[in-house]
Image (cartoon, rainbow, N blue to C red; front, side):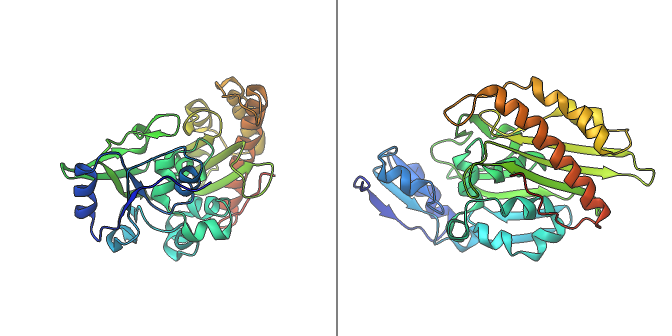
Length: 297
């Protein structure tokens, strides 16, 4: 199929894009186009105006700050994949980006586009949830920030007003030497995950966990932080046996059901993927905090 007719706009600045979104009726933003173009071709979306953000250099940058990374929303996934700053400061993102689509889609896909598409099984929203990312949003009315936890408004629906655009993502640092693990189960490599898990650990000299983060994707309409498991881990000596016991709590999570998998299967996968992600995080500490590239197939 071919897309419906629309007027094309290519602003050169964020301010110009904001003005267009504030004044045009039935306008949609175009980031990398890896989701938008198929949706246009299948007539799932029918905008009168398409505002392309690809000509705004200010939105494509990876900036190192004392507290973490600030990533422009139009930064290509391939640039994240090859960034030394990402590997050094945010190894969980370096782990996860290997699972995002294929090389061809990562060449065009953007971090902001993935977040705004907000697919329940997408890798980058899960990473932002795991890291307690802070998002910067701009419109002609001004600039505001929000924690990622407040970003999902519903299934594939971000908390953005029609005239707003996501401009930047801030990923806070975890302590040097922390553990990180990312795994997922998909029927084919490059497909969206049925269930994925992202784990972060900080372990003290005695081997006790002092901080933990566990996030699941593919379970519900948005990434899920599993607070029950995080709380069960803190203060305990890190071990595979502990992870196996603690992750049983994932079996009680409310899970969605669709043509790809029943809820019970997703709950079982949540237990298994969580344990594997935590095992990978602990292994990465033993390896000096290097990316593990752990696989969940």
